[in-house]
Amino acid sequence: MLIVLSGVGSPVAGLVKAWMSWAPVTGLTSADPTRIMVVASVILLQVATATAVVAAKSTIRFPEINAQKAWENGGIGIDDVTEYFLVGSFASWIVALGGLALTMAG
Image 1 (cartoon, rainbow, N blue to C red):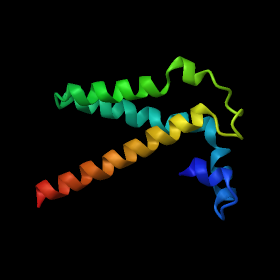
Image 2 (cartoon, helix red, strand yellow):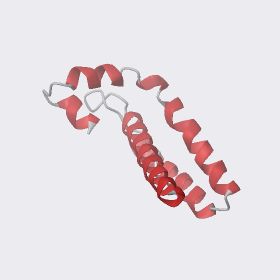
Image 3 (cartoon, rainbow, N blue to C red):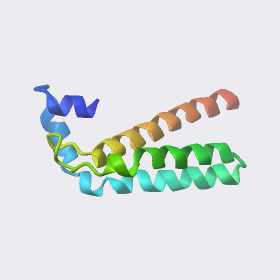
């Protein structure tokens, strides 16, 4: 969604582009949650979940895809897309797991 909004003349395009200028440090955004999820999955004996996280990250960062220049697509490179995908996925999973935890607790 951010990619679409940043390319068109939407009212939030300026905000999205300003947020995307922060991209060089966004690798830190997904690295820690990825590690935490893998370690937690292994501790909870959910090896399939840990495998899925590692496979998803590996697939997203596939060398042929990652070879694209970061700015060849109007300022949005594969690193940005990867970051949005991973952060969005983790946010969705956390919300889903939180809902499941609340359901099981109540």
